[in-house]
Length: 382
Ligand SMILES: [Zn+2]
Image (cartoon, rainbow, N blue to C red; front, side, top):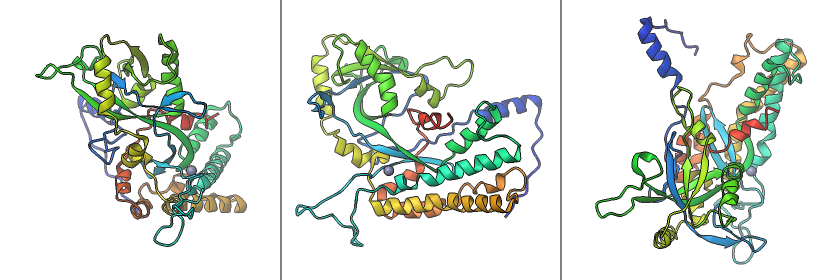
């Protein structure tokens, strides 16, 4: 099965320069539908632009009786299948009962939800593999895997931890915004159509809770009326940043987001119109159409977890065997322990397609975790 390595092409200095530049700046993300309903699109992080938005004022009371923005608040597991990244909703503590209080059952007579989450239950396996990998790599290089001051060790640790195929669930927030088109995407002067009306599109805004707290809450505190939620206000989402001569990208745009409150005078009617426009954009609708927020049954998640963890389990067994026999299972660089990128993918997709047609789109979901899940990696490389 080994592929034969072709002879590298010979290029002129200029060609080489051009190609090198292009091949160093390929987008690592593929654009893909994040919503299963084109009438309810998901806002895409714009690269190095400013966007004028209105947050519709749909409010509910929280547990303390305080008004809070109505939103879907899914716990999402980041999952890596080969080179593909996706998010899958956690089912921990969820139950579904019929009118008589009995569990709602699937075709096989199993409860759709039973309070467990097979993905939560599976998170130990990738941790174990990461730790074993770190130990093996460090021992081969005569490094102490616990030496956190050593940059090589740090690199090995962070690569192993961020390569986990299944991570603990993180909280995300999903609510509607109205994006108002502006001249040159500067977020300043609204564009008008031929009837002199604003051009505005409702979209789902999706952000990790930690990023929301960092990017939005401080802005709200700085506003004149110190609102506890952004509903009923206009904002400029400023994704521009100093690219230091490099091409701008989505991840850094998201990282550099600044949320700026904007007062628009005499906007009462406009705000009411936007609120009305987004009445149907409920948390239930978000769970229905936003691909990462969709809910799958416990038995679907069991299949997904089994397929995802098959290879890590095999690799753990290999590494443990190598450890106990003192033999090196790798050929020297450890690369043959890395699973072929796409193996298992078909199996995983099969498992995922079983439950819902919407799941099929999930394998196309790109790694749009720039808006938050970078912190997945950060807290692991401590
Ligand atoms: Zn879970």
